[in-house]
Amino acid sequence: MIIFIAAAWIAHNNDLGGYSRIYTDVNDYPIWWLPASILLIMLIYDTYFYWLHRAMHHKAFFRWTHLVHHKSTNPTPLATYSFNVIEAIMEAAMGFLIFILMPVHLLALLFTVTLTFAFNVYAHLGYEVMPRWFRRSFLFEILVTSVHHNLHHHKFKGNYGLYFRFWDRIMHTEHPDYVKTYDRIQEKRFGASKVNEMKRAHFPLLLLMIPLVGTSFQENSALEGVWRDDVGGGIVSIYKDGDYYQGKLIGAIDPKKDAKVKRMNFHVLENFKMENEKEFCCGKLAHPNFSFKVDGKLRLKDDSTLVINGQVGFFMQTRVWKKIGSNE
Ligand SMILES: [Zn+2]
Ligand SMILES: [Zn+2]
Figure 1 (cartoon, rainbow, N blue to C red):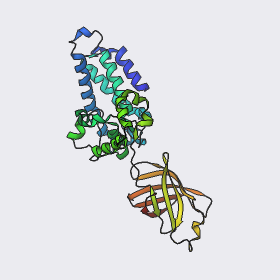
Figure 2 (spheres, rainbow, N blue to C red):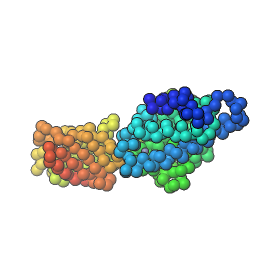
Figure 3 (cartoon, rainbow, N blue to C red):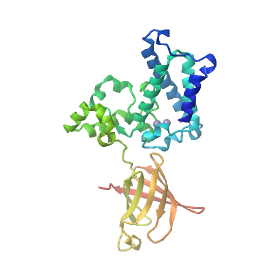
Figure 4 (tube, rainbow, N blue to C red):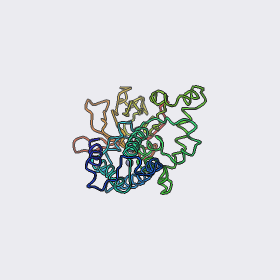
């Protein structure tokens, strides 16, 4: 935020060494230029952001430019300004270029900055709040939605656009399940209930009640479910608890032979956090027969194979679990 404020201050007070074309008298240019310039800024900025964003996802740059922003796999509005200083500088730099390239009225500038902020909060909301009619309007075809950007955070690949879908569609980087996912989320909200008709009529009010009426669309991870450990003999249920995944013993393959599984409901996995679709980190592994816990990592090899790594000092132990069912 400090970097963006500094950039605004420089552009406003320093006049960019005389090159800035920001103007304050509306009559300096035809009045139609005001809305036209806003649209143009959005198109230019969207194009710049799309290519910058793709570059930042390149493995040569990702770690030191964009990784911080992707620590949120199911973002909240707080992720809007959660990014690396370098990313902030690169995003603010485009502003300077626009002010040099074209005349921008101060009001048009304030409007686009406010709009970008509001749109970013919406994109990182974690809830879809678009009304039902939006899906059938042409706006759906061109605008990014909260589901669209959430998929980017969840899958890491695809959906790089900021406001518009143009570039993702042209470059074939839009997530193939985007529209399907959007429809599924909205179906949850608008299903059949009459209450939803009311929500539509009170759209502005709805924005204030987002956490109550929006539908969180984080997909369940394949990690959730019941797993079998053939070596240890345990059967473990992994479930999500807030942001963390926990695993507790719920049975044994052969209860008579296996003394280890005496302590039912014992937590063998504690506080694992999703790093990306396949990897979960920073949790603890525990064993019902021992009192100590070790640092662990989980990796989904596929939807029904889980590789568990436990680290004890320099030693690494690996176990492979097989999925045998869901939690219900
Ligand atoms: Zn990204
Ligand atoms: Zn984001």
